[in-house]
Amino acid sequence: MGIETFGPWGKGAIKLVSEIGQKLKEVTGEKRATSFLRQRISIAVQRGNVAGVLETIPYVMGLSELYLL
Image (cartoon, rainbow, N blue to C red; front, side):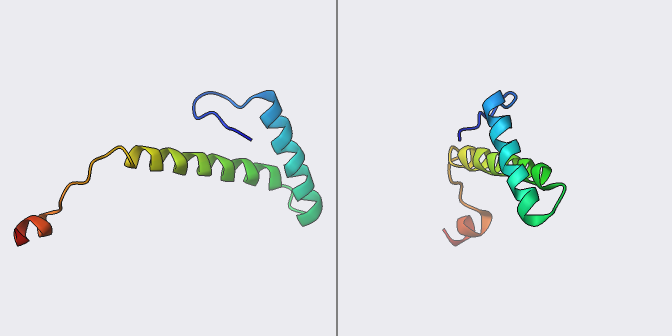
């Protein structure tokens, strides 16, 4: 499943996550399972975005490294 970083989720993604959430509810008995699943997916997307941004920032020596030079 692919999730676009910007914009709303498509109908297919909403349906898939809802179906998975329903299965989680049945297995765990947790009424908020679908909500928790959506939150976890959103956090995973945010972490991926952060990793992508951090890879574009050049390494800069810290003050302690400059002192040793």
